[in-house]
Length: 585
Image (tube, rainbow, N blue to C red; front, side, top):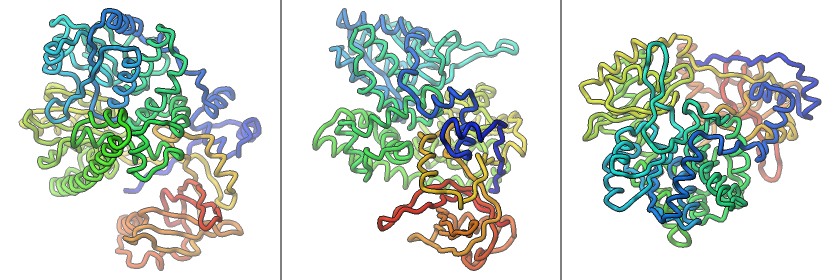
């Protein structure tokens, strides 16, 4: 699919800014595109400080939650933590469980089984907790929409704290939305109305981190809480794909730094199993290597294994790490099979014309619905919902594009749903099979998406001649890290580069290496999976079946989108362009 290239153009004096920040002008442009504020705000962005973390006491109901925990400690009441089955839930439980054990709490934890229990705390889990003598329940990364379960806990005489970060359910009263909160003793969620906490985009594990920080502060033992727990909050922030802006940027920047020297044997064993060094950990290695291993446990086994790994040592750590790594390898294979089924269904039913794709993949494991929906969304640039068959009806996940709030979309058709919840960009839902066509029809009729909305957009930071890129320029880009959602790697563009040489690389012959003539020098570029992309380009744009790309492209002029990187081989470091998109001029 051809994307629309769009140059960002915020007007300012880039020359003066470049001098003030001691950065190349093109990097100053990248900075303004991410942080269009004052000079002081830009300096804070480049050098995020732990002193700028917000006071957890600003969160609504935080004091109530801490008081309930203190009472439970003083009266030796039993506490149960209830998490979610993804990486955010696992890290939330690890942070809270470690901290509460440190203060001798009578505490245990429960994580629902994805298939048997579904998402979040439910009435059966509440019943079980009561039978086992639990006095205080605390949810992490779930609970904000668990009205029945929370009310049941209250009816049984239990105290309950809901900590969550998901969007608050609401009802429409005329033209206005009114949030509806569960009847918990305390609700800690920065997104709730009346919460003065300045930053709303935290993940569940950071909300847990804030709760523990406040508890330790009240107890006078908060000296090393950041060093001990911030790395896990950072892992969850990246793994749960939160915006890397504001406070999240501070958490991830410093959390990754602390992670490089972490002594957690389970985490070190998982990194070793994945052939990764935590000394070189990055947002990429968390998002695409470690994170999927944690999530695979909740998808194909039990998320308890993720938590157990973080508490394990020695041979047990190595065993669990190997198990999680192998589960993720299995998950990858199953995902690819599911994507083939999804593509077959889209083509055979003509769903590629739908503005909101709703797919029922009966034979796909329900835990993979979200991953497949994400891949479908990326392939067709449309909101995608993938549903699978379960004992309780159709269950699935949704992934969306920037132009469509999937949570509000599902809210508008909630009469067809048994259950739903989530974010603007991702959601989960359960529906009776007989309502499937109604859901598809209603979402498409009400989407208000235009053809322009359904065209993927690439936002270019600056035009940059490859001949100007030096090793020091590439290293200066590190000031913009950590990269991730809402703080992507910069995208640079140049027009009319001449391809001097082209090589096909890789075991499957699917990557391309170029030498471009730029000014008076040759610059190397690598285009991963470029063979298929360029073959598709020739079919779509030129209506031809390309036979020899190396012959077709030799000496051609091309327009390029790229990110500059460094490639070291045999002790020699060279500038290399990581090609993002390429068009024949």
